[in-house]
Image (cartoon, rainbow, N blue to C red; front, top):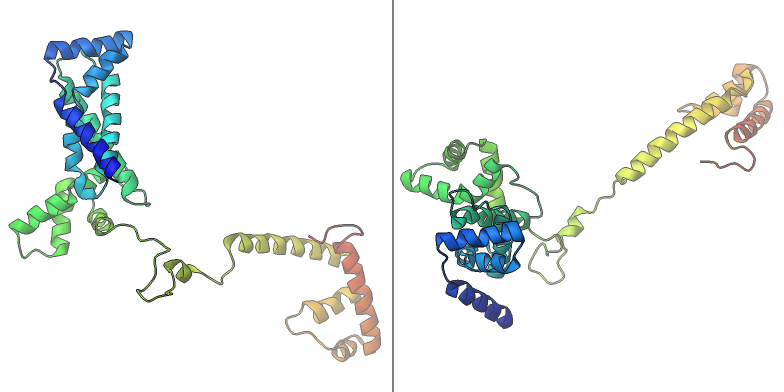
Length: 284
């Protein structure tokens, strides 16, 4: 940590000691980089504007990220600005680079604030970075305003829905909670992950069961066509009915002995087995 702090301090001192560039010198360096890919010119151009990166990193410190990370992202934005800058336009490089530096830091904060991706549109980004300030300003001007009224005012000011404001307010209320965090302060307390365990079948198991069930139904219907009418009737009332009939009941319906019913049933089941699962075949 101490080494990291020394590196940060060294970087900040180097940025603050870099000389300011006059307009003509700035444009000359930008042209040399654009036309000749002169890396020395790029280094001088970006080094002289690193103080902007350091300064802007301080504006994002409230989000809890390490200054070194913010400065690194800002430097990426500075290099992007140098690549895209057109020195022939009447715009100072510092003005142009400021937008790219800020955008790079904002994207970094949005990517790392939460594992839940959010703030992808320009309105959502504006809401993320301005919600606290606008809410505080409204509450100062109207001390008795309820949360609902404040959210409505913020939504109107930024141009988003009230539901978006409420959702973003909840996201900003605290960081993500690890599923491995204990549910209480007691020793040996269960983790939050333990509360997510479900005894219900997994989605892939449900799908597999449904597909296998449909496949077996098709095979069974085809196999039933191989039985005689009497065999099919006995299988239906003995094996497929919700409440199976007894051998004696089936014999009474068909006018045969229960032993004869049993024999026919055994023969019919063997025929079904052969029809559904051919010799050497796969029961699936």
